[in-house]
Amino acid sequence: MLVFRQLGDPTSSTYTYLLGDRASGEAVLIDPVFDQALRDAALIDELGLRLKLTLDTHVHADHVTGAWLLKHRLGSHIVVGRASGVVGANRYLSHGDWVEFGRRHLEVRATPGHTGGCLTFVLDDLSMAFTGDCLLIRGSGRTDFQQGDPRTLFRSVRSQIFTLPSECLLYPAHDYRGLTVTSVDEEKRFNPRLAEPIAEDDFVGYMSHLGLAHPKQIAIAVPANLRCGRPEGAIREPVVQSWAPLTLTFAGIHEIQPPVLEDNIAEAQVVDVREPEEWRGPLGHIAQSSLIPLGQLSQRAAELDKARPIVTACRSGARSAQAVVILQRLGFANVANLAGGLIRWRASGLPVEGGKE
Ligand SMILES: N[C@@H](CCC(=O)N[C@@H](CS)C(=O)NCC(=O)O)C(=O)O
Ligand SMILES: [Fe+2]
Image: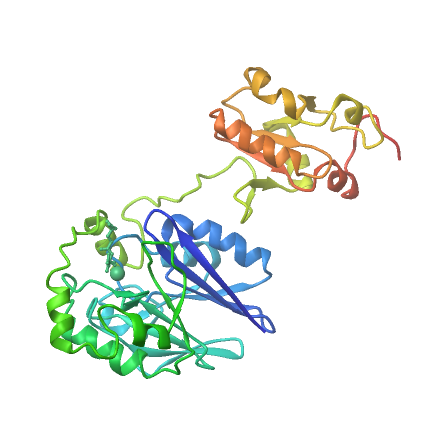
């Protein structure tokens, strides 16, 4: 079974694609974004997959790739096109190569034109292709920098993408209007720049008059992407070193597992956000915790020390996840949720005050 997810980065309108082979657990990420790398890692973990490698369709001009950060965090290999000019990758791809994950693979097609080194990745059964910025939905990548060339792009689309089966789904690296997917048939008929009746010279004329400003991040993104997204100098990670091993969920909440909290409890302020009768009830409560019911948290937040880490707790971990969000909104930077709440705390054999056996 194939696992497939389309992930978005709202800042750069980039799409990242997760493909996984359920049987082996091996996964690949196409065009990961540096600022979303920990989110993507959380999803891969929650889906029970292992990130084998990251793929970049090209040297992006508008965002920094997550390839290096994911390698640093998860040990994935960095795979890029040979013609990309990138240094520091684990593997360099050429037209016709295969990228395997479990029993599945992607076929590499060279589709230059947006940049000199653009690649399209085609799934083994030809059901989907990842076109990078070569073919966009009812559009195409621009051709005015990074060895871009409209004639080359036109020929790439016609020879490498429009030759795929008409029902093949096409997934681009960007969409600026929120469109998510198209197909070969649709683009052959309705692409305003590249539809079948349109000639190469028409396309060149269209592309010479786009009048687009350069991407805002180009001066930062291109040099960083030429080194696989490795930061210069000191390592800048989206999450600073934390007081205890925390995990980030795909839902976007930092969590701490009960035994990890028990080991580090002296460091943290534990806030139980249940109602007073639950605090006194059969589940009991963590001895070092203080009670601030969720409904009172905003008004009573001043009772908490902003300089010390906070762990929120409740019965199951649901209300306390909302408590994390409330405290973050109030400017508390270091807040984590007790995963699974008092139920998991007790199931882990950890002590409570009050409560019943
Ligand atoms: N406003 C965006 C522009 C992004 C941009 O130029 N994107 C490139 C892909 S890297 C493109 O080909 N865009 C096509 C278009 O905007 O029609 C930014 O500043 O990042
Ligand atoms: Fe691009």
